[in-house]
Image (tube, rainbow, N blue to C red):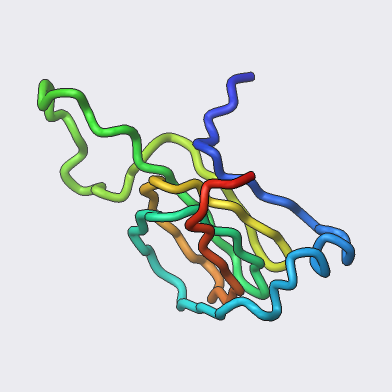
Length: 120
């Protein structure tokens, strides 16, 4: 089974020790209503989903040339044939450089932090 995930890491039901380690309650908050949102991550982001439900559709890498343009006219949001799902209680890490569409089915509230440094 090939791992198609482009570096999105979802930690389901993290332990209280993991939550304490992150100190996520000190991070900024962000929220959105149901809908589709096109995002590009300029830095690595870690977030804790307080409430909501999301499917993230990563965009495929840009084509090396504009060879065949056989894209569906009605679906600019049809990124790839798979998605990453997460929701309330999950910790999610998005890699720098990721372009994707968030398909939010339940309003989201999250705490987030951008990691601009490259140390491990």
